[in-house]
Image (cartoon, rainbow, N blue to C red):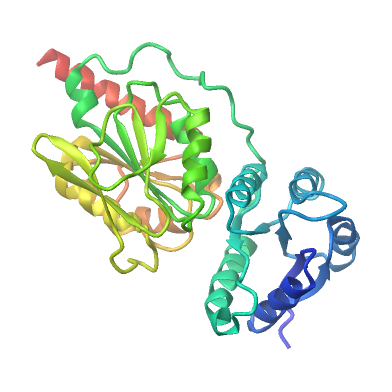
Amino acid sequence: MSTNKIKVLCVDDSALIRSVMTEIINSQPDMTVVGTAADPLVARDLIKVTHPDVLTLDVEMPRMDGLEFLEKLMRLRPMPVVMVSSLTERGSEIALRALELGAIDFVTKPRLGVRDGLLNYTELIAGKIRTAASARIIAARQPSAKAADVPQESLLRSPLLSTEKLIIIGASTGGTEAIREVLQPLPPDSPAVLIAQHMPGGFTKSFAQRLDSLCRIHVKEAEHGERVLPGYAYIAPGGFHLSLGRSGANYVAHLDQEPPVNRHRPSIDVLFDSAAKYAGKNAIGMLLTGMGKDGAEGLLRMRKAGAHTLAQDEASCVVFGMPREAIAIGAADEVAPLGEMCRRVLTHLRTFGERTNRV
């Protein structure tokens, strides 16, 4: 038997969920459950004994709330954590808070009693555990106030800059906090931002609301056919591809449920390809942290269409997969740490605006 299996500790107050999780994980050749716990206090003792590589953690439990436990864990013994959340509005808000505190990812609980669907959950959960096991643990960065460490004067001295330029962002694992860090410093008159973040349906609305409360631009879920306006960020709803379109002189958002691309819907490549087609040199493409290769080819097509493109550097990524693929094929004009991404974009926009004003 291999000694290199990923060791997983499952924490959930439901005996049935613990059983299902154990069955899912132990069915994989490269991972094993080293223990289960009904609450965080039992988990705390088991961590010291079993030394797990990954922890799966329920969000609502007796004796100690999952978020309280996660916060203590990331401060005292940082380790990869995958949250197991119920698909409810409160559950989605808690899951997003968990990502803010340092959890790598989250999954919705398998539907109990529907054993025929277990295989689908097996692939999803096992994939997230593998990603978590290889992820970089990054200290939680608390959201700052809306006033950010960038110049407060108006960014846009030319109306052309606000109406024609677009910022296009793709992200996956680790992306919720990375996107926040990029959006928060943007001034209210920023060009419109379109975002494809790999996230299931039911969570993107809470994600958009949370960002809207923290940012100086407005953040919302994209709606099919709506005009894309400066000062707004539009997030692809979970389960829908988001693409850019044109209606006369205006940019518009397009949503569809065509088959997944690169196993994802929303797919970053779908969004990037539409930006290459309809925005060309007026777009700025940004590929952030995430597993796999979604967005790499699309970022290259954006660059070939004249867009300015950026990829997040390895040191600041939770998972370097997607940016690595983009860099390898020459898709990125710039490779930058997450903390510099927004500043690089603003610098590029200001340079473009100055050239426009001189014409």
